[in-house]
Structure formats: structure tokens, C-alpha cells
Length: 202
Image 1 (cartoon, helix red, strand yellow):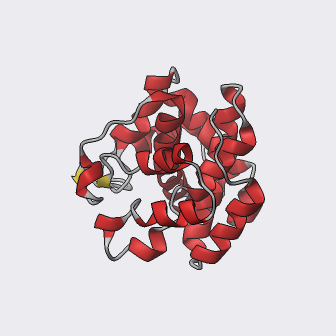
Image 2 (image 1 turned 90 degrees about the horizontal axis):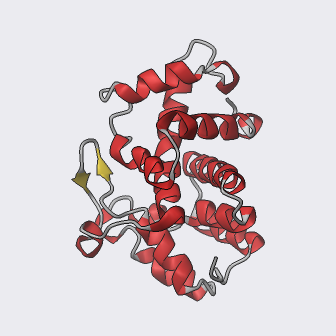
């Protein structure tokens, strides 16, 4: 992997500086956890993938009411922190084609028609999108515990497009472009979030 220009401690500092909302912070932790698990699966650098997972939404609280600038404000933040062009491009790639529900694009026009490529970009997009599906599937269980969420139940929730409709299933299915079946990917995601269930309160 190319140099990121930002180490793990610096990434944590940036998250603390730019993210105050607890739910957003939990999303970053969830994405970090899945990215770490995917890095282990593919024998990639776990800490570097964790950094990318942590930072992928770094500008969200600045742009959530102005989503046409989501992933653009991140460029300035990351550059000022020493982030490399490779890191910035990877972070931006999760926004390509991103949208609420069935393909309703909400991001900047200059990113709308770009396509993700390579292992890392597909993994980041699939991972950060899958967090919402896994957490939502947990919260509708009576016990609201990740440990009790069965993979079969998660797969059924994936097939029900009315459930957690904001989770774009096509983006989650990009896992197949890196050689993972949907079942394998959801298993990795579920197990990785179970590993941080105490931090998530789930």
C-alpha cells in the first residue's frame, strides 16, 4: 500500500476534533473494526486499513446539511493533517455513487459517475455501508445484542430492501468484486462488530 501520511494516533485526533456526535463516532468504530477484519482476511496492513475506516467520514458533521460537499471538505482536512493523495482518493471513493435508498445520489457532482476500483476501495464502501445494516438488524431483535444476531437473520434483512432502506445493497455487494461471497462478507462484518460490542453497547 502507498503511504497514507497520517498514523493511527493522528487519525484518532482528527476524529476527536471533527466528530462530536456519538452515533457518528460509533459508525467510525464499526467501519474501523470491519476494515481491520478485512485486512486480516486479505493479508493487508491492518492498521492502515483501520486508519482509512476511521477517517472515511471525517467531514460528515461539516457537510451533513450540505451533502454536495461531502468528501470535498475532507480533502482540505486531510491535506492539512499531512494526508497523502492516495489516502484522499481512497476516502473519496466511498462516496462514488453513494445515495439514500435505491441509487439516489446525494454527493458532489464531480464524484457522481466515478467508479471504485481495486481491493481497498471496494472493501471500504462495502464495509461502511454494511455497518448500518448490521446495527439495524441488531436493534430490531428483542435483546438488541450482536452476540444473538444470527447470520441467517442478517441475510434475510439484506434481501428485504424495505428494511434499513438507506443501506445500498448494491454497494454492499461490491464485496463480490474482491472475491468474497455476500455470506462470507456479512459473516466477517458481524463477527468484527461482535468483537467491539462492549464499545457499541450492543
